[in-house]
Amino acid sequence: MPSRMGTIGITIGCAGIEPLTDMRGQKDLDGNSLKVTFQATSDNLASIANHKMGEGSESQPFAIVRDSESKLTNRQIQHGEMTISHEQCVYIRGFEKR
Image (cartoon, rainbow, N blue to C red):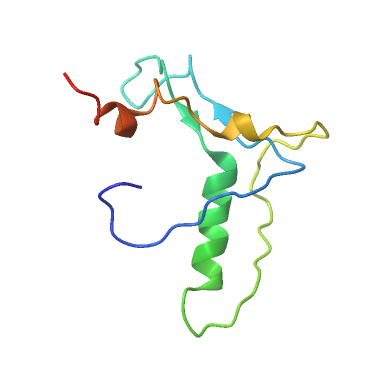
């Protein structure tokens, strides 16, 4: 993430779970309807695994995440489902000339 210190886990491939949770239409903490929110489910799980595996001499080559309550699927996940267009990306739009 731009302007953030530290490492995070990200998904490089996904199978068996829905990589995103569409939260549009759900309510936020103040009762307002969410209009653009997608939860990056697979990236969140990758971050949990990354935290448990460690970044140094922990020697944990993999992590098993259980009971995540992620939505399971048998469909083929397309790479484009987990990316955002340049027009929608707030970081890339920040580089546009005004």
